[in-house]
Amino acid sequence: MSGTESIQAESGSRQAMLGKSIGIDLGTSTVLIYVRGKGIVLREPSVVAMDKTTGKYLKVGYEAQEMLGRTPKNIVAIRPMKDGVISDFDTTEYMLRYFIRKVNGHSIFHPDAVICVPSKINEVEERAVRLAAANAGAGSIDLIEEPMAAALGAGIDISRPRGVMVVDIGGGTTDVAVISLNDIVLSDSIKCAGDKFDEAIIRYVRKAYGIVIGKRTAEDIKIRIGCLSPRPSPLTMTVRGRSVSTGLPREFIISSENVMSALSDCASAITEAVHDILSHTPPELISDISADGITLTGGGSLLYGTDKMLASRVGIQVHRDEDAASCVAKGTGTAIDHIENMSDIKVNSPKKKLWTQY
Image (cartoon, rainbow, N blue to C red; front, top):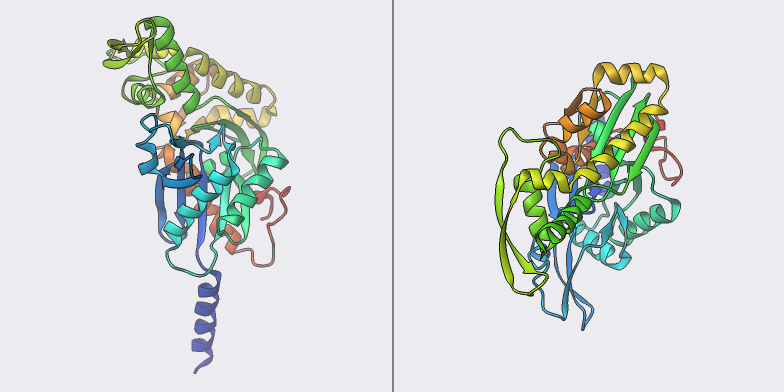
């Protein structure tokens, strides 16, 4: 065997031993997994169905989501992530194990993982993510803050000495960050995002119409006619729910203007978080952000008029990424590439910032 062939064989053997490298967007409402060389290969709801009588898990992902609000007494559909962090450790571990096995196939090697976490996660929550991923079958585990991953996934060059602002609206949290020179200068994470939008719609319908609707119906209203700024032509939707007074089924019509009114407090909370970060940002970086605009990412940003609402309230142009819902997962893919190119540096410390390493 020639020297070149020997090197190639050794390299191939090393790759086989390493197994796959994956990036996980462990979202409150959706889990996305990125596999190096393949892109995003899994996108499923963060839902697990369990039999309460036996304690046995039954379904995960889309199949479990179909059971939300429709299960008999002995079966419960659980969303183990809440506000961007783990609220049910055992169920999260089971869900992660299921998804990792789904993308890792029959490989006996544990895949290395880069996992996204909210920017204001505490040490206990961080350890829970690491432990759940390790127990679920991940090899080495690195964490990256969601706004950093979102910026990378949106194709922003974060290595320059220039300020960029990212607002990532997910299912459980909205993360706001100013980034420069591969690091986060300022950041904040608020528990107001897609799930809170749904809860606001449920409260509005109960108060305005005296009708109770479920989370899936509220989400459907949000997706179909929801908005944070006025639509050119108002939309309406016929909805069915249960009357508070009679307990019987009742039908009503809700408009996009009604939904915008229901979401006004959520819009204000997001605007306040952005304004607070801007008010503490150094003048030089503010100048850069004013010139380049704010980048909007995350599935929650797909709500109609989010960019217009934010731009009108903070006075800075806002750009929503074309593939906003996938930015964080794509960003983990970029992180994977950089980590594998840093063979002499270990990124294992829970307190280290992933992107201060190069």
